[in-house]
Length: 65
Image 1 (cartoon, rainbow, N blue to C red):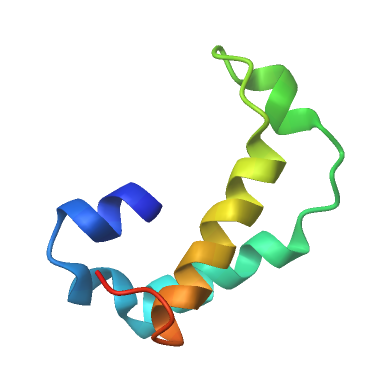
Image 2: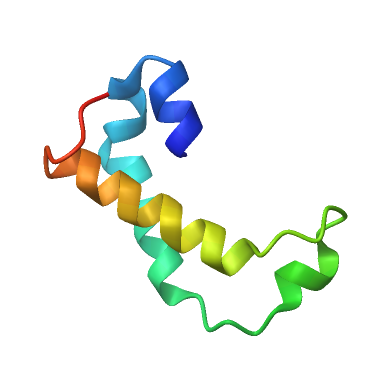
């Protein structure tokens, strides 16, 4: 999301739909299943949390896009 919101028209990513989708990140229980399925061995839970923090900063006006 951090890259999409900066590279595409940002208003589409700030809709109620995407706010709801991004809020789902808070439901992550760190089971690690996503990490075992990722072919790039990314630390998905931490990446999601970082993206959510950035998204919330954008929504709050602390970061300009």
